[in-house]
Image (cartoon, rainbow, N blue to C red; front, side, top):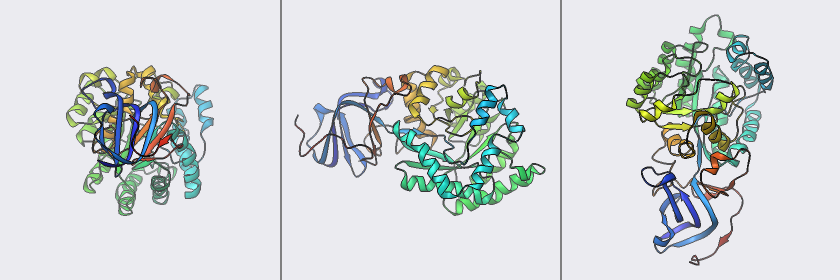
Amino acid sequence: MKADRLLIDCHAATMVPGGAAYGAILDAAVVIADGRIAWIGPRADLPSVEAVETERLGGRWLTPGLIDCHTHLVFGGDRSGEFEQRLGGATYEDIARAGGGIVASVKATRAASEDELYASAMDRLQGLKATGVTTVEIKSGYGLDQDSELKMLRVARRIGREGGVRVRTTYLGLHAVPPEHRANRAAYVDLAVDHILPAAQAEGLVDAVDAYCEPIAFSIEEVARLFDKARTLGLPVKLHADQLSNGGGAALAARYGAVSADHIEHATEDGIKAMARAGVTAVLLPGAFLMLRETQAPPVGLLRAHGVRMAVATDCNPGTSPVASMTDALNLACVQFRLTPEEALAGATREAAWALGLQDQIGTLAVGKVADLAAWDVQRPAELAYWLGKPMLHGRWRDGVRTSADPARIDGPPDF
């Protein structure tokens, strides 16, 4: 077997379900060819390999590259003042109704150039990459006019080209009503649905469509209009659903066959059952739950009982989840939502891939999958959800190419 790269002297948490915990293979070997996994298994079973490069990983653990499947990484300005307001007693709704919240980010994002937005987003991206992330979903939604929404999506595409991560872009035009349309929200919905989305799609900037369905944001009827348009354009949908109240978002996501319903703290059992029937992935966002000091956690027990996939993401954003560490998000999901460490890691790999519609490409270490991997300085995979703030990443590979510090290498065949 000819290969570009052979990884040995490692253990693999493949995250393939149905076998050992974490899909673990002890003393594993991984063969990479043409950017994909050509072989993986116990080193003792390794066939004869002619590899251009062999890397010894010193007994470290390999996982799939982590996937942050819900972020608002591109934005202008700073909202740390709202953090102080919330600690002083103001609620998220209070701040939003007073003209802060998302609208404050809209003003700053509109004023920023593409280069400025790119530079600030790349700074935040470093935290995600340092915690093993190889794929990031990036939403628009802080522009809320055509020029600014397209500007955000162009920046997200640029990050995908230049930032060392795989990027999926999401149009979030129905995030908030911009100030200039407060007296006529219907006109803004028309603009977002009938003009901005088609323009973004025509420019090749959109991989999926999202909306914020809450009483302080957009109604089921308004979101349905957007999702109908997305359907005509052949775009998958996802939804900010039932975060602050039970607004029927989970059922709406199921009705449209959404790839994910995100937040879902207030989803009902009927909504969860509908998600299960439709194959909708739940995306849990513990950073926002922590920062908003919410008390009603997502119904994890119901999600388990009805077999709904659970992904975990940072929700990196300036107002409610200034989280730029994927491993911290895993810890928060365990501590606050009572996920097991294995569920949390699956949520940032296998299940997150489902939340982006990429389950056939990434998310597990298996033959044929893209060789997006991370190597960790840990004794057990559970440590990835255990430590807060501890650097654990040894290296990342994207499409089979190492994108971080040089490993210890040997030339020629491995010395078994």
